[in-house]
Length: 484
Image (cartoon, rainbow, N blue to C red):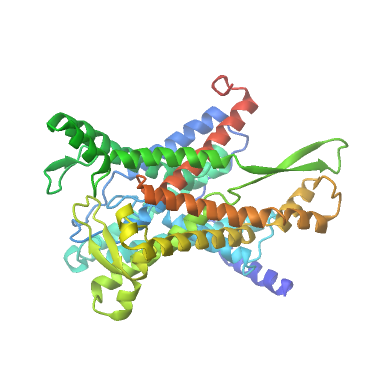
């Protein structure tokens, strides 16, 4: 069966070959790029992304309803109504599907063969462009940019073209960073930037909103000073600034800071397994197995699952609100005083997999809180454990990688089955327990009311910490003054 899969996989990859010359590509650098230049390229890529996030799509009409994609925008680094409407959705979707197909051996890829790697990356890029086109057409046809009949076929085509070109820019920026011109990946950089931008905006937004209690500023910090200045009763003003409902408050900001600190603390938890060289006598080192072994992947997958449920549930509920099965999937209401145009789930499955809005909501519906916690912990643990097999980071994969580097675990010289057995004591446990910890931190952040959602905070912190580790590693290697 291995030969069958390999043959079928190679046939699939060779189908991509004729299209390779048509695909946009960033050439790999001929020599290693200096750290300072990589910083510059990273900053330039981020600048291009942020500019695209501010340029509105030409030809669209103002939306008349709530944003059905609101719940997906955190992990997709997308910005409503702009060139970055699709964000990194095509890249993430194409990457996840191709990794799943590769991990399940439906597509066989030999990482040691250069042609296989090139063709696999080409197939992933081609799939990403196809998803970009399909999503762009779906956005236009769903009426997100206005009635298709009113806009006209020509403007619809222009909108699709704008989103397609933006998708190409996003794919190329990600490829530019991943090929060594910059630091990290475009996906991580754009997600972290989008979340940090949300936190800053919710803290300092000068937008005013009429909440029924009078005009208030959206930004929590600005609202704090505004209330202290304008209200005669300072204690009441502080109480409102710290606990006001519906809008960001100071307690939300403090909770966000607390979650940042806790996640960074847990990032340091790891087990160091001693390894020795099979070629050089006396050469040894260690292989670290972190508590967050699969990093933020469990929460990305879990959020992608829930976001898609939200999206389809909202679309169906708007059209078939009286259908009993649609009601079981989710019932929705437009959120009052919401500047983001988001609807909130008030019933059905979508309601039970969404975080309670406050502690009073938890007390009034404890089953909702228990179901939500159990769902997040279970899905994060399962996704984390499944991801190690799909992504090539299982015990068997790690043992093979160590042997290819002429390294073995200390005390298990040249016995791969014994190494796999020893690694299996740590890796599956670290994956499942680490996934549960990520889920638990997300739940805690949601319950505390952290700005940008628990998922967003977790993603931002883990990505920023990865960049910090890269800076420290590169800085110590090059003896940079600011890293001493």
